Length: 344
Image (tube, rainbow, N blue to C red; front, side, top):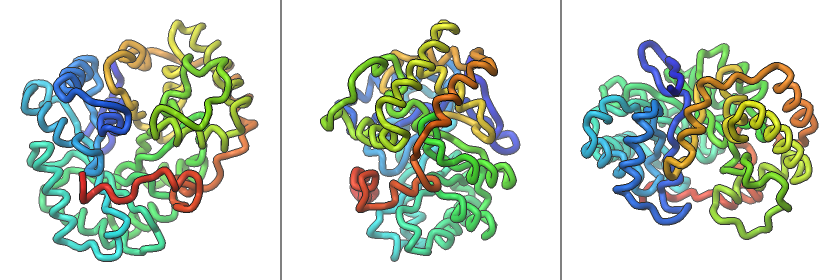
């Protein structure tokens, strides 16, 4: 079974979280009925925690329909959504709009209280994120939200939220063998503040897999925005040659354990300090058997050393969490979509 972990008190989650971005349409057509059947299969396998967002078009509604169609499964599920106001609204968003967005998530998900709301803020140059987080805390105290988290907050701004008395229990961030930006600053601060890390991008959108081992560097025309995003991270890491060295080492370790590269890469991250769970962007159940092996996989010290021998030669990516992605004029920032809340 998939291991579990307590984030705070008696609130526990599966250490593998079913991501929802891949169901929003950017990765191809989605059959909602089949997606709901898959959700039930994930729950049966022990992956009971689902991640979504107010800006993932149609995903909150899909999970709400799943809860209605599979009530017994729904009782076992934890739903993590996000609060992501549009970039153009940051300077003006106030109490009424914050509550309206939260009420919309409640209605879509067909719940009376949101398990975890993860707060994202596009531009820290607009210094209203603490004020807005306080509105989310007001709604938590009113019973509409059980727990508050952050997503993509860097270390100093996360500290601002904590210093303001916002009870953040988690920060969902991009963290992988290829993207080490959270280490050591974010990891150390979260340890001191008792904040858990929920990691996405642990398999780099699928690049950390046998599919890409021994292949030439892909061209500019990739199948989806996720691959485009992580291709940039691989370039920052040290390029395709260094990445192939990492895949080769992971492939050897995977073969020794009778598993696959993605499982090894995910297990390595789950063993990192402060990492509570990894989000996997599964569009179907095809990799579910591999996910199920994560709980029993134990990487040996010499295997971790093999991985470190490669990753120690990284060139980047540089900066704090999500710093590159906040540069709207840079390569990472140009592929983001900043105005999805009003239309989603």
